[in-house]
Image 1 (spheres, rainbow over the protein chains, first blue to last red):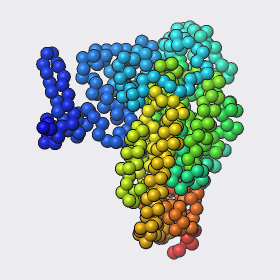
Image 2: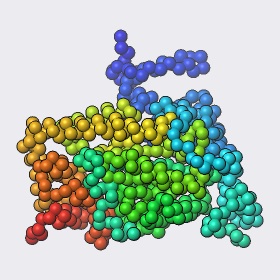
Image 3: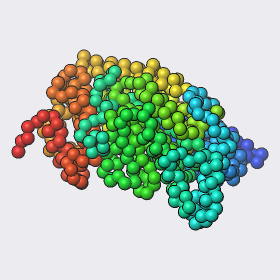
Image 4: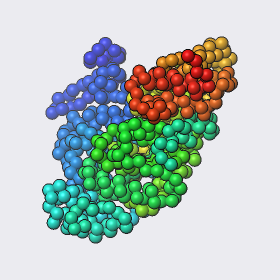
Length: 179
Length: 357
């Protein structure tokens, strides 16, 4: 016999069993209440960001995700909790920092796709370490300028230029005295 | 070429030509790209956004491989009306124009309006190519060339596993979003829009109204776009549109049009001519009503029931009836009530109706 929805009299289409601290918790929901609980995506053309938000919310209750809240990207300082709130990552390195947490999410959002297939930039030359170092140096430089610590800013600017020489005509960092 | 000069006419993508232009209004492709070595826009501080803007602007405006003729619009010093105008022309997104006033951001626009490159929207770069009718292959060829030209001197954030890295994980991978804008009045009139949604859903494509997410299907105009950007190549994504979904929806629409002609010609003509009658005589028109009426007139024109106007002029009317265009053409700011009067006047004038007292 068909089971009824826990919340109304309609037929349940979503069934789940969770073991929490040794106790079995069953849940049976109809399409509407499942959608309400973020368990299913009811609308055919759900805007993609909503899909993502639902998915992130759905998976935020588990213990693994609770622990993940504390995760921080060591390049840009974004926390996983902040990502969950805004569904935007902070820098390219975040994909690595949160890889375990976002992989299932990516597969869900991309119809099972987990690995890139397609165009690869010809200029893939500059190493990832170098790019991450640049991101970090630029963050520190901005903090230094905000604090008006121009001595440190000038040093950081030189470090940046050593890694990435300024292109002719570039206006980069013209706001630092002594530039 | 400046913003002022583009106002009165529609861009290339609205000229009502191109393959299947009776159903397909336009083909649009965009690529999301981010510069390596910087945080994404939402995490970047003002100065970093400045760097990104200057670096990207310099590369875009100095590369002859992108285009012989383009102009740059800095959003920080553009009047609100100009920004709205660009949104109505689908050259920039609502998100780009409504960011904080002093946030460094801008857009490079090809003089023929076939492409636009937004800087510091959600991603550092959003490259977009627009074509009239069903021209995805041509659009992809152009956008790929622009992408290659930018890549000559910009390092894009890329990982072998996740592809082009984007601020929102829903764009990661190819960073490619394909959108085809379709005019589906007969499917709508015969109540079969669900068929379109099903065809799209099978391939994990989204169906939306004219102005993207969350908007109504004004004027029976629908946008079909891909949601998957990771795990499928550019060629596979394009093939879903070119070989499967779009031909199928065009066939549905044509069958529905043929059925209307065969089974209900009087009802069809009545719709078309009532719409024509209101457009040529109304003294007050809202944008919503204008879109709905133009849709029926367009249906009549494509079926040869009405030949008083061509597709290009109809497309142009769709564009210039929008608030910012209307205000620019009239040369003054107007409240909604004033716009309804001006819109009705403009429509009568463009449809060749002599001024009556």
